[in-house]
Amino acid sequence: MQFGVTPAWLMGYNVPKKMNKSATVLGSGLTEAQNQLINYIQTLNPSDVDALLAIVRSLRNRGR
Image (cartoon, rainbow, N blue to C red; front, side, top):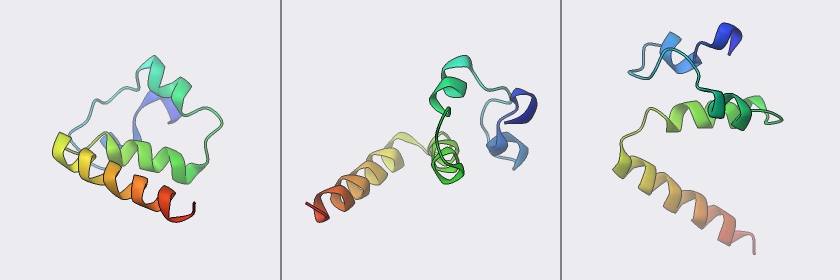
């Protein structure tokens, strides 16, 4: 996130070039993998986000 440019934009995804302030705050204290997930999620369409959320919930419930 050097210079406030999103990594997803640099990779050619159709996302905003500049990070907004809330995204920068959200990424604070997260691992690189967690930040990458956030960047990938920002490139997904809403139905894919819903599908990914269902997968994540399933993974969380599996360990309980």
